[in-house]
Length: 41
Image (cartoon, rainbow, N blue to C red; front, top):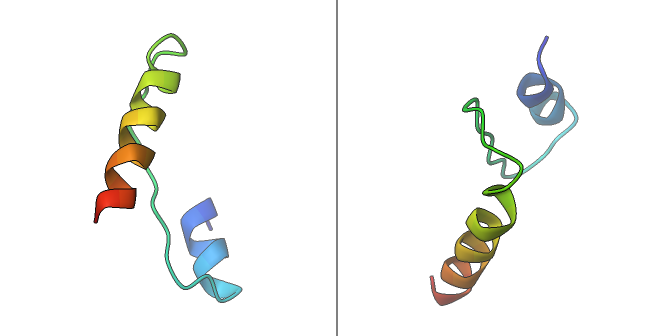
């Protein structure tokens, strides 16, 4: 069982997972972009 399966098993209604390796230097910028744009949706 992987993390995604486990979270769905316990009833998580929505889940966003990424299997790509992302550099620690890029992660803060990526997450800011993600949350800025998800607010607009």
